[in-house]
Image (cartoon, rainbow, N blue to C red; front, side, top):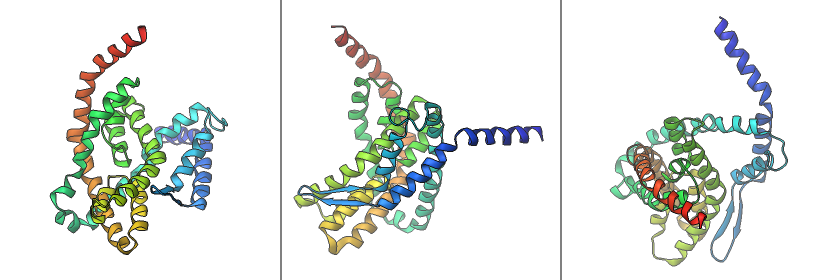
Length: 279
């Protein structure tokens, strides 16, 4: 009984001290959803802004570095709530996978193993992160594209307050802001070359990030309006498979490989950087 009282008491105290987080989150979601998606056609592609972009901007502006609506203590508390918010999305991925099990089983090898392509970025992103001064944050940041499922995985493996989780969360936020714009324009640029079939581009849009897939699919649907339905269906199937295979690739290959490379590269690259600064 005493334990229950203490638990409910501490919960009430936390809600009382962190109420601003929940109020602002609700306000920002309502404003961002009211603005909706904005598509701006360009010569080189389509510039697309999604509601998550506005909400992230609002949240950063409310922080201690800008308008100081939230204090540093509240910002740290909010970072721990990210996993709680992501959990329903992870469950939704599992439900979608079960509902589309026939698609999963009938998919070809290229579609099933496309997530392995993420591993190539480790060899480029990890050295760059270390050179820029990141420590163990580089492991979380460079092991994958770092979307919802990857962030949840890193948080579970290393802990909420770990440097690996901070690195993963940073890439998740930057990807949500810049990645959506980049994917929309990149899809248009590649489509205009005429090298790849629209269906191949649709499959390539499903990289494990729902918002990036939506951005690329929207651009492709504008270029190929007669194939919009097929593009959307293939991109969704690809997205579902990437979400499933991405977890296993990250667990058994991505994170172990990144950790080993970090242990090998960090002493060497950091020492070179320090010598360059001394000169």
